[in-house]
Image 1 (tube, one colour):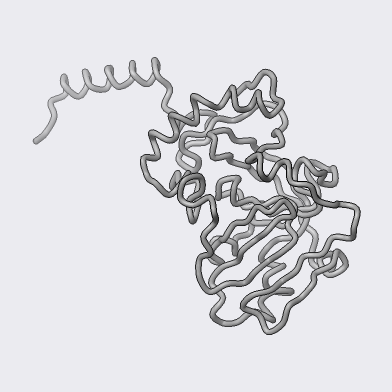
Image 2 (cartoon, helix red, strand yellow; image 1 turned 60 degrees about the vertical axis):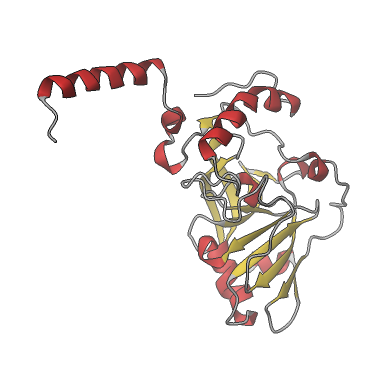
Length: 251
């Protein structure tokens, strides 16, 4: 059934007034459909995460090594010298926290995961390898399908905005996967396991989605994404204050 012009015009006006009165979350901060429900945080990103990981003690004074195990012909210990043999790269990338805040154009320096995979991991990987499990010194872990990692914007970073990573943002190495929520961007990477199946995190499905794709708003594995978005957005300012952001501002 065709809509007459007067009715279409009336609906357009009503819709327009609603949009002006109530900005839609998916347009907030200009992030659009690539990051629905996200707001751009003005200022530096805080040290953010679950308390059980934030307060885990670990030693950063020893020479960093990443152990590679799992679906491989042998276990390997990747040193900084091994990683520095890869082409260096610097990229300006966005980071999206599941709590509905984002920071844009953070400059990360390190190595592209595609180079890490092709030169250091794939030669020893079993043909059944379908995913990678990253583990940090703080005990956090994330299982990510290999297909979601083989993109030009996925990195293993050692530097943020020109400064070597400190404890707050993931030293010595941090995984940066801009199209997945922050809980997949593991800090303090110390272990890489090559796997042929998804390895479930203890945080699934309540806090973490098995994939965590930002564009699909996969905030966790229970569904009800719009409701979860609303709850997180209402809790965002007090939560940021608890992490040291005294006056959270967004655009």
